[in-house]
Image: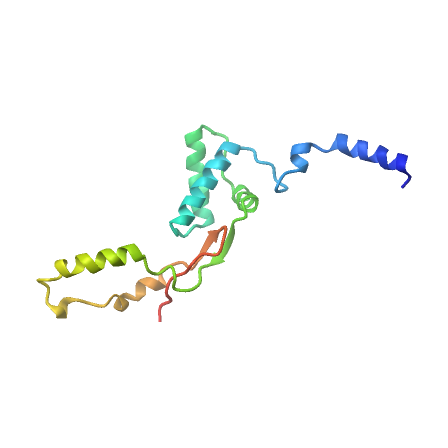
Length: 156
């Protein structure tokens, strides 16, 4: 292009492009920024608690938060959930490993409290927790996350 043509096209394009939209992090604009902010804060808090999160959970929570904020026209559609996840870098991930299986604080409490609780119990009435492995199979190993999370011990 000639320099004058380049300038002409540059000025036309600058007039056509909305600055906020052009510099946006994602291709989808946010229609309810307050809702988006509250939902992301809630999501991060739940993720820190190692909660298993799904699209249905996000959908239900978004409807509740929208009602709380007075957004009566908000529907929390599957498309909104999908775009919310895309805007915030949320993906479905498999939680690997056994590192998330044990709560170290609870273990230290149990070491001090259990002997006093079980002092009058006969040994034949005390069972190993591994004998309840059926409950491990019920745990969902996939969750929505912003980063890799620790998993739980697999059932054998």
